[in-house]
Amino acid sequence: MGLLSWVVFGLLAGIIARCIMPGKEHMGIFMTMILGIVGALTGGLVSTFLGFGKVSGFNIFSIAIATAGSVIVLFVIHKIRACRQS
Image (cartoon, rainbow, N blue to C red; front, side):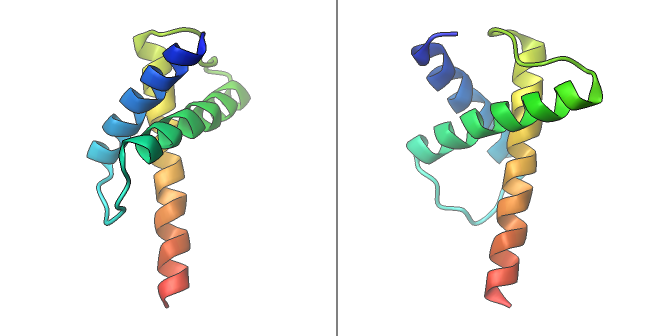
């Protein structure tokens, strides 16, 4: 995928993940895009390790993997912030 595809893909996955797992993060559009891209990489690694496949192009399965990875990243962010506040 090209750079523009990764940007759009990451933004879409980040927005969906933030809707699934809302929180008090004050993320702008750029950080949401970064969340989606990191989530795509994380989801791709986890799904490849588990034998489900990987992020391969701009399709529904890849968006689901990227969204799941983004939710994992948001979960880790929530846990880190909870530990820092206590």
